[in-house]
Image 1: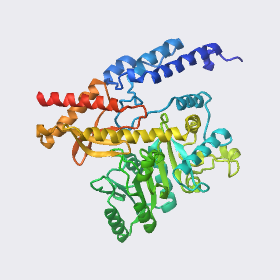
Image 2: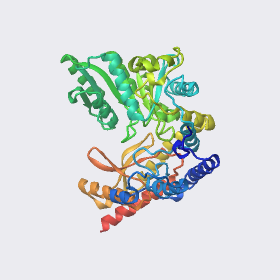
Image 3: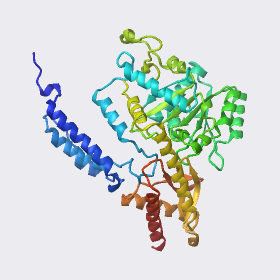
Amino acid sequence: MIPNKKATLEMETEAMRAYGYRVVDAIVEHTATQREKLPVALASREEMDSMFLEEAPEKSSDAEEVLNFVLEKVMTQSTIVSHPKSFSFVPGPSNYVSAMADTLATGFNIFSGGWAASPAAAELEIVTINWLLKIFGFPSKKGGGIFTSGGSMANLTAIVTARRIKCGDDFSKAVIYLSDQAHSSNIKAIRILGFRKEQIRIIPTDLEFKIGLNKLQNAIAKDKLKGLQPFLMIGTAGTTNTGTVDPLSEISKICKAEGLWFHIDGAYGGAAILAKDGKKLLKGIQKADSLTVDPHKWFYQPYEMGCLLVRNHKWLKNTFTEKPEYLRDVEGNTSEINFYDHGVQLTRRFRALKFYMSIKTFGLQAFRKAVTYNIDLAEATEKYLRKSARWEVISPATLAVINFRYNPIKAQLSEKELDQLNQHISEQVVASREALLVTTVLNGQIVLRMCLINPRTTLQEVKDTLQLCAQFGQAKLEA
């Protein structure tokens, strides 16, 4: 019996080659001309429905026509997070080598769950995890880790592991501590894992947005007196709001004395360790029991790529290993790591390849220079803002994040008026599509926030955006 050609979901060799060339050409064109494009995509649900909503087609369409439609309608309706003027949230600068590595991994459809399926994929994950262990000062022999979809899954994996090691099967009295600036993914992970609201302690931060050590110690002491089980402290190495780093060395001492697992969420700021100034701010990061870093942020990798590092690789294996009958023939020996035994996913894509190829191609030195440039750019932006009578710095440049607001000295505006003015500026900038710049809230104030981790962003592009902000602000004041 010979299968129908279309039913095998195949294309002729030359057709595949021509199709692939067109895709690569489109990616190269997009990468090379980003500055010429508007970074922001704006569309309503109604507009998107009118463009895309249809029943699943029963009959085939011409492959070129489908590709043209996607290039013209889909790719143009997405915000360009790698654009030099994408300043909000945490941009995704990416890099071309890693994008092509992802194409290879997907094109060859490599299963990166177990050693037997792809020893090379497993080995490259071991190698690249070892690179990260060394970068962050974790034990090279006992340490381990796993690549995940992102920081959210890395944090979830860390909390599951901490609970298993510290609490076993009974976590009814377990208590978790984190600051009011900790990333929301940690709270989401805690809830997913079945912890009750009363098992979470949100510790207030100080004026620099760092966790209050005395308040943390008091909370732990009170919980112990109540007969509860403090077991996990989540510190932050680079908060999303301000780039602030908690006092990691001091927290590690508290955790050691009190018997708590110390997890550091460095999804945003961890990569700053590549820069001299960043390494100083991250002092103590090597003291963590587990550490989340997000290569698809400041390690310049494409989505999706998160990572969890642990001081002892056995912690992961002891937490996640299951032995179903259908996998009994592929267990291998103890040195042949099956990464499905180290995390949540059984089926895993080959994430290590893009990290491996980009580091091999550009070298760590290039990454160090890029991170250093980002930190310097944010500090230069702060200096520029402070020289003006129109701007007020609310949170100084820290790990490439800076918060500020438009507040002309002569205007003498109330706090409510300032909030409304800066919200208006953000809305107008986004509506113009010239830059992606949104607000956050610090100490009850609505402020503008820039995250400057794109190594291709220039100071002039920052100044141009600030000038646009000032124009919208002045027009609002004069209206």
